[in-house]
Length: 273
Image 1: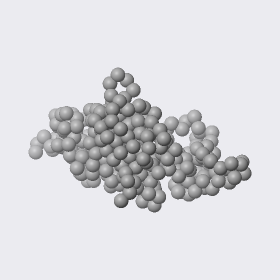
Image 2: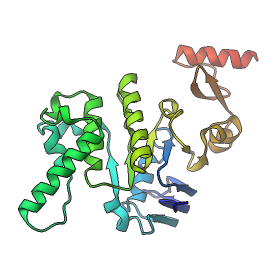
Image 3: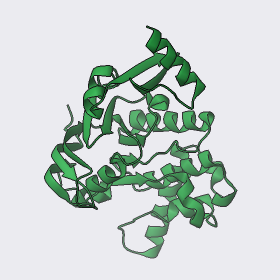
Image 4: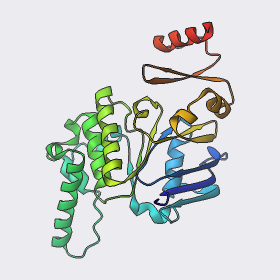
């Protein structure tokens, strides 16, 4: 069995006076898909920055591909949210993907040819050849997200961090991005750590979940982590996990009202049970 691509042992990190999370231990296996779940402010971005060596550890240790995080950075690709491309809207798709190429061969001709092959390969992997000559400003959020993934693939990474790739996408676009990530895991053997505040689009795809809340984390199969008992311990207050029609809802046990009518109905049924 291949060695884990990430081994984090008892880590704590944060930019301010207090650590955003502490005592966090987990592993990411090769060719795996891990959902990084938590609300805004739970530490998802800080964890990405820590694994990239951009935020210093306060305690614990991280091993990525057998190296310190900063030393492994060339083997890691980071995929930001598509809405962060507003300043890159003048690029056409091919230029945008090519901008990330980091060729190491001498000579302009060799570098150009290698870059062209790498860009073609990356566009093909995400089925985006048809977007190569379109400006990013004229593309949909889902199309821009595919080009972001292509850019991440251009240097053939071993590990991909996807930062809220489903945010502000319609359900159809979300489904296509999740299917694409799963295909990359299965065909290329790439490990993927994908952050989200809503686990539902990833329930059928993720191998494991790393759930962050209240400065702590739990990791394991979704059915083991997203439970009343585990999340109540994590949040420090009683929590309900409701599963209905393939969807998962995490609800504070004492919540009396909710803006979402569907969840309100679920809470009412729980309180009558």
